[in-house]
Image (cartoon, rainbow over all chains, first blue to last red; front, side, top):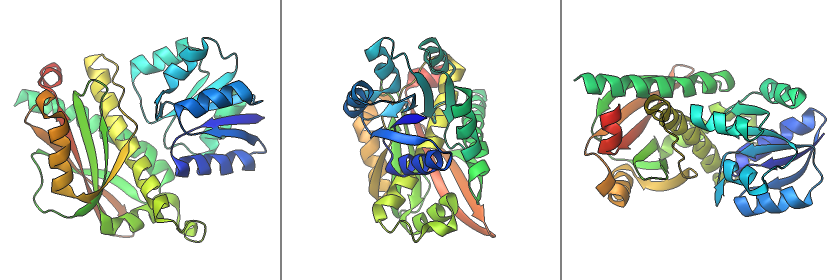
Length: 114
Length: 179
């Protein structure tokens, strides 16, 4: 699987990237803010987006809304655990929500499930 | 008195959710030591992480002594990390993510309890003396906030050593009324 990783925290981005590569997948592109995310969504060849909900310049919900229908599998990664935000993400087509901090197994399971 | 109890319950539920998740991946064990109001005595050089809600009606700060950062990060990430990361920025990123997890859990519990969506800013890290940081933060948003500052004393325990941290929550009168 080719994965687009959108996450602003360098440490978290690195640990996720290491885990993904250990699973045999590839991080094809990375973004750490809203503008980069839009650019990478438009110009990268990926199967899954790992999308942090709180990023500089906007948020993950706005990114999905920006595209209307990204037509890709999205896994949200967030420390937020709000009922209304979860509902909105599901309504926008997000396949899975991973709460931070998540384990290697939880990430692997989410990728397999989508 | 009842109102304080309700606030306490919401905060404790929120912070415990974050500890459940952190304790799954960290080699140290995290727990809440005490809940009270006001700013705890004793100033120190800190690394602090804060979030402010989009409507500026919630401000929340995670404070750790600068001297404890290395130890905290070592046990959060794993001991073998020393050789891989030498940058002091790396430690800041980890503290930022720890703060992000804890603070967003509390904000989420407040949001769920009162039935609204609260989207905070991206967590920001400040280096400096605790009281200076808290004063400046409350000045940034003072007009929207209640005078009561809630304090959660938290502990990360590893090998019989406790690393103590403080979390301060400031809420607008409207939010306090709903809790």
